[in-house]
Image 1 (tube, rainbow, N blue to C red):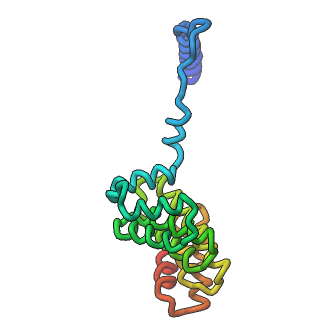
Image 2: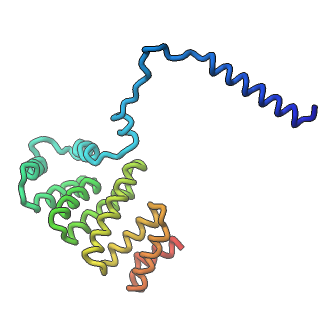
Image 3: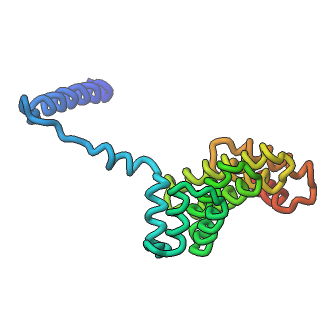
Length: 206
């Protein structure tokens, strides 16, 4: 018997032994419950929750009941139409060094008034949150939020080259469409050859 035949015989014998071993393993008795998987626990491991992020950020920032920031948020929850409250809360998060939370509040304001400046405020902070994301889920969430916000800015003002530059960087660094980001950067330098940030990043990616 040559070496190849011996190898095939050995593989067949091993497969038979493995099948027999699996057959003889203890089986779950009839009527016994299969182990249950906590779907909420699994979801927490496979998805990012902005609500949980905001709550944990409050602890980090020392945002306790009765503070001025809590008063502002309570007013919004009760239906206040004073959009300046979103700015005040966002600035609190800026001061605490938590851009993702600040971005969320500017985002909520932008959804209500659709102003370029508010979408841009949200986008800048989401951009920073993406860069400083503690894990891939957090970074992915803020990447998507930043891209959405920058696109809103460009819908309102297509000539905002700073927004287009940042959007190009996000696509180039964080998505499966890096060429889309490079093309955006090329559009910027075509419109303004002296745009340093776009030139710098375009040279880096090419």
